[in-house]
Image (cartoon, rainbow, N blue to C red; front, side, top):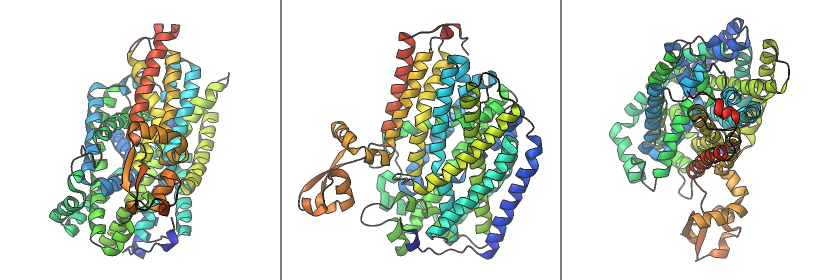
Length: 555
């Protein structure tokens, strides 16, 4: 998109810049100071497995409540209205159930693993660990590819720095800050800073929500959503909105985000006991609920505000077609920049940057640790020293940081950020869920089944909109067979839609009804791959049993 043509007003002032810069410098200073406690690889990766319940809950929520979470949640609230709240409810229910039952996470903590692929080796062998670790790292790094851009878009929207050169500068500065203290301090630095940032961000989100209600009025918010979105703005099962399949997909993602996703599981592995693990998840269920609800409400408020301001409405809610997904990401920060008073904008912006840093540091550390522990180290006959592992992990952190910068500038999002993250993560977690669930609770799960489940996960990449557009010559017949088509009068079809669907100019179909190929929803792709991965695990295990499976002690 043409950033240089975008001009937005904001109340962001010099005082706000002082607050933000001062906070960021203080956080980096603390991170550098804490480096003295990262003395070995266990301290660097899992904080010496010494987290107590309260600190573990704070760092769990602090990591999962990142700025990217606020951005993609606000975007979902902007596009889906109050119906988006079902995602928060699903996350809370599933996390609570994991806490009560200890499903997956307690057996992993009992096995004293630092990463999920480490369990793969114990259960299925070194080859599965290396492949699983590589897929986990690839999926995770792809998943966080838009984090840096989302954070930079927030800064652009709330400060009014909307030139294309500003985007490049902001992305670079934010990345350097995170790399400095994550590379030096490891998990000890991450845990302490997550605690600080959790407090600041909670205050910021609550304050912004209260001011949104005061500025817009609760009845006005509800009435506007009713008028412009109708039933789909409140009912997640409505076919014009999310739909049943999407709700089912969200419940599975709730399970994944707390019990299968490595950045959350590493918190369980850092806990001092299995009892603490259960408490961690039971209390975190409240945080998983609120981390979605508050940003969703800010997105809903931004939608109402935009709808009532003609200049903003032309930008974010154009009459012809839909706004670009990267544009709608800007709606919430632009809204906050125009309604919050001077000083408070700086505090909330500092809190949001705290959220950005708390997520980035954890993800950088997580994926670099997986590459070191589960891909590189197992390839050596002699065990790597703790010092070598820490050095290698830091090198991977820098490499991943460079990738995130390049990918964020290059990749055309093409869909809501939340859906991009869900489907990119599915490349890993669709297979990983089969390996964890079957590997921990089914004695007959075998190495062959594990390989099959992991390979099936690659099919999830078909849920990315740019991939579907690139593979249209293959996917269009499938979409036609599955019914993913729309008969639309040509006068309502934009030239872009026609070119994507049939590669013909709009004037060539004037006065006709055009069959436009719709994208296959990411939830359909994700649910399908889950089933395929589970079948691959079961069938592979039954057809190709192995001795290791027979000797495994069930959890």
